[in-house]
Amino acid sequence: MSKKGEIQIKYSDETIEGPLREWFKEPGILRWFPAQEGKEIEDTIKMLCGFTRWKSALTAFVDDKPIGVGVLFLHAYKKIAHQCLFCLLVDPDYRNQGVGSHLLLNLMELAKKNFNIEVLYLEVFEGNPAISLYRRFGFKEVGYHPYWIKEADGKFRSKIVMEKVLN
Ligand SMILES: CC(C)(COP(=O)(O)OP(=O)(O)OC[C@H]1O[C@@H](n2cnc3c(N)ncnc32)[C@H](O)[C@@H]1OP(=O)(O)O)[C@@H](O)C(=O)NCCC(=O)NCCS
Image (cartoon, rainbow, N blue to C red; front, side):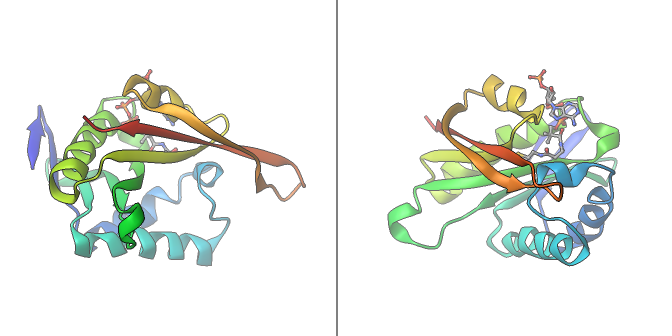
């Protein structure tokens, strides 16, 4: 789709499954996702890969190596199809180099041009440094679920919902 320096963005295909499986092995990564263990991680990967058939998932590459993915979770119902949840995941070795930003820019363009999405939103767990990235792109906090996650030790963690109207 587009190029920025050495980062290339393409529609994701089923080959993204392997890299996703690797990225979900990062210690601590599950802090930012609802999945807790093996079967749930596999379900998450299958769910993310499922959107490749609609061409609503993008992969970032460097030298033909996949280094990140962004997925639009398209809604099937017409009344809510004008808005869309999305998710970003970047290879830990390539973070803080603009890959996530580049994916997000391309996702916003894809959402608007290919799917007539007017509002993009995201769900992010309390304490995720990604909140700073989303604020930088103009996403505003519109919702707060204080008891969203219940950890194994019984402690609750909150989820923040952020959204942006696409102009
Ligand atoms: C969130 C994420 C996709 C950002 O990708 P990235 O390539 O590092 O993003 P960029 O380099 O474009 O921007 C870096 C920004 O992300 C923030 N950030 C988020 N998570 C980070 C992390 N784990 N390590 C370093 N920086 C992180 C930085 O604070 C920085 O914000 P700023 O530019 O406003 O200062 C990536 O950190 C990631 O995959 N995190 C784990 C999965 C996750 O939490 N996904 C989001 C779920 S809502």
